[in-house]
Each structure stands twice: as structure tokens, then as C-alpha cells.
Image (cartoon, rainbow, N blue to C red; front, side, top):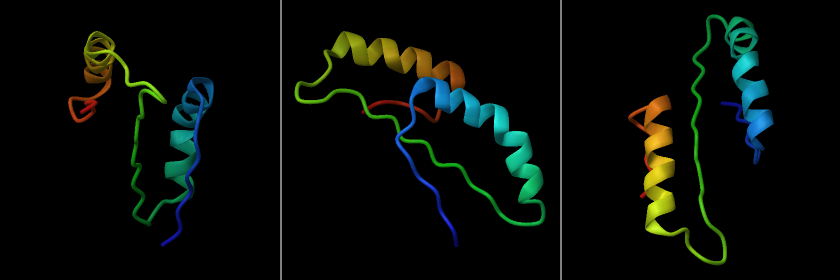
Length: 68
């Protein structure tokens, strides 16, 4: 199995989303899976109110995405 991973900025994630059709077409006949990880915070943790707001926005994309 081959894998690619990178830390992406928001605009790069949008570019990836736009390339999904080409990626799926190029991989035709082979299994392809996308795994998304979203990290929030750094040296100091994000306040609960921010986590809640981000989770609301994430749920608009997929109910599978939730910061915990």
C-alpha cells in the first residue's frame, strides 16, 4: 500500500478537494481511502467555546468529524 501525508493549509485542502475527481479517476480499479485528521490548539488548549464552534462547522461537512 502506498500512502501520502502532509500538513495542509486551508487553501491546500480546497485544492485537494478540487483534485478528488482526477485522483479517483487515476486510481480507477484500485481501493483509495482518505483519512482526515484535524488538530486544534498548540501550547495552550483551545477554550471549550472554540471547540464547540469548530465542531458545529465540522458537522456541516460530516457528522463523522468531531474534536474530542
